[in-house]
Length: 372
Image 1 (cartoon, one colour):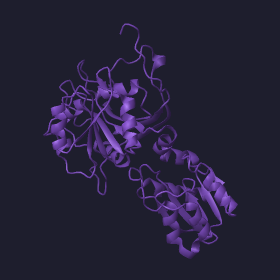
Image 2 (tube, one colour; image 1 turned 180 degrees about the horizontal axis):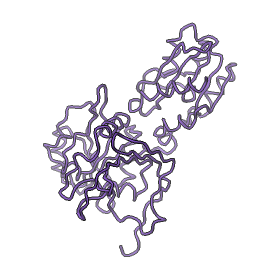
Image 3 (tube, helix red, strand yellow; image 1 turned 90 degrees about the vertical axis):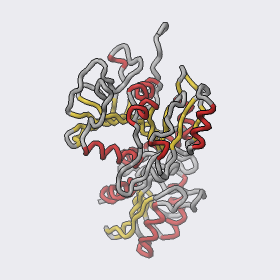
Image 4 (spheres, helix red, strand yellow; image 1 turned 30 degrees about the vertical axis):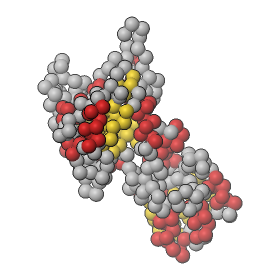
């Protein structure tokens, strides 16, 4: 029975994905006599936490109850008061937390505070699911960098466009909708200037009630046209252009007049440095990035060891053609045993397509061989 209540808390928490950064997505349910009497989730940074929403809904019925929460309750003052004190004041008898908070300000202190106040505590129920839910928050807290997911749509023969560059549409409607659902849960979506010049995408979330992620364009020489859709969108999220010192100052000024912010970052081999970019995004409290680039961006991200998860939508189509681009460019590996491998792999149908998801198990940046 307890597992069902925690699954409900996880379901609630997912509603906050993409909306709570730099905070985690958290869900909570208050259970008394085997019945849910209150539930809530963290809706956005600075607003009441999940536990507070759930306790408010439960009211007096929270006394003597069990609180199921997807993350250890906080015990410090931030933009909101400590959840531990609200739990104690409400008379909750037991707290079941899926996992300990990786935030150094909490990290077990919240559970200790509850135990000291006489509240029974249990930790670890559906921990794997809870960690997957907040993988971006965990990485952000432990490394100071955003979580990076590489999303790609490709044919059976590994092509992301035809030899003429046409790519709409490789996958079916179900997969395209899932792609928008991903954008809805990530803080930022990233592409290279090649994708902008070829496809002129909006990079928005076209879902009822969806929210747009921050759009990040890699453009080391500032070739972004002023009439591009990402420049002229009416969106609550900004477009950021990552460039280098090689970009002309007049182009920066033109983009600034169009309302586009440019981030001038260190270059590596003439391109924007991935470490510098991710550090800059982290300072902006962007905790998750969805890479939807072309072959060059995909290859560069993998080669520099910045990709955490891969999501591939494979369509039952064959484009063929020597000049048709594959999903990943760059140097690639020399031997099969050097390949980037996925672990914790999940395979599921996506309409007529197949969706494969997995964590990158090898995060060592690809080294060039001497003389290359």
